[in-house]
Length: 247
Image (cartoon, rainbow, N blue to C red):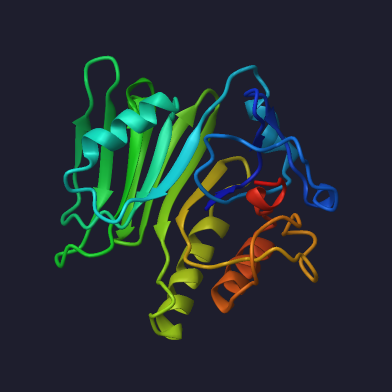
């Protein structure tokens, strides 16, 4: 799932601003073959204008259920899809470091945050051309990592998150969502946000009661964790992007 604070991305690479009031009419032509998960966009025209300069920035997210023995294959997949940044979850690595992966000319730098037990874990791969633009790394926990990247004259905050799954206590889930809500809400309005990760919830196919946040496309029924995602998105004026087109 990817939540974009204020800009969208269409199939031909032209950034667009998706405002909440536009969600009532989903875009049937917006499907992206490289999309890996859901996404959200917030309607903030001043921020969106910063990306209307004829270039694209691709972001993906992937729960890989352990990165061990898969880093080479993953980097190849990112390079084939021209990913600039990839947010990865459930990596099952310990510690908090960074290192390079990939062949010369196709390299990515990996920033990660894990736990001593080597469970959970979140990471962000950054394409070589953007590495010098990374100005800050915030490792909050094995579930939340934030990277700040300078894009032209603006600052992009990239979140990679791994929400507690359905078997975890409600108290742990509430604590997670309260933490990330606080982190996102404290970001200045002149900065952009990409909130990506495995949020372990189903928002369903119906947008009844959440037409300003849910675009009307999806699968199945909404569960309690999906309702938390919708509340989070609505509270921060976000739109779930992959509900805006038919998959």
